[in-house]
Amino acid sequence: MMKAVINLITIWTNDIDRMKDFYTQVLGFEIKSDLGGYVEFESSGVRFAICKRSVMYQYSDEYWRKAFGQVFELAFPCENPDDADESYKKLVEMGATPVHPPENMPWNQRTALFADPDGNIHEIFADII
Image (cartoon, rainbow, N blue to C red; front, top):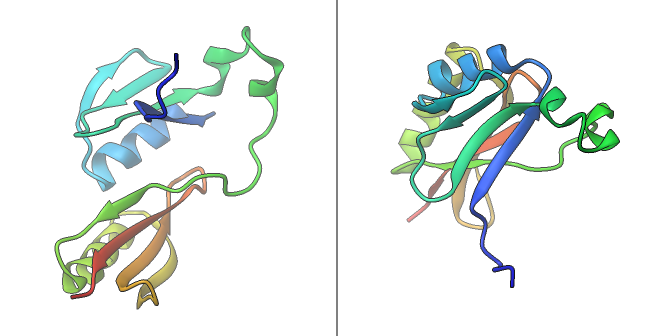
C-alpha cells in the first residue's frame, strides 16, 4: 500500500544545464548523481532532483506539453529574519530572479520570493520570534 510520505521532488525542465548551474552555483546544492538528463542533489530529508522532460517522452505524451503556471514551490528556511534579508540579497546578486522582497507575513514569518531560470517561484523564510 502506498504511504502518504513524499520521498522525492523532481523539477522537470527543457534546459537541464542552466537549471543544474542555478541549483549548484546559486542555491549551493551539491550533486549526488548526474546522469546527463537527470541530476539528483544532496539533500537532507526529501530527495531532490531535476530532469529533462525528454527523458519521459516515451512514457507519456503529457511530458511533451509546455509547462504552464506556478504549480509548486520549494521553501528554504533561514536562521532568523535578518538572515532571510541577507540571503535574498545574495541570491538575487548571484542570478536568482527577484519576485518579492522580504516582508513580515501574517503567519509570523519573514518571507521573500525568487525564481529559478525556468520561472519556478521559490521562497526563503524565517520564523519571527
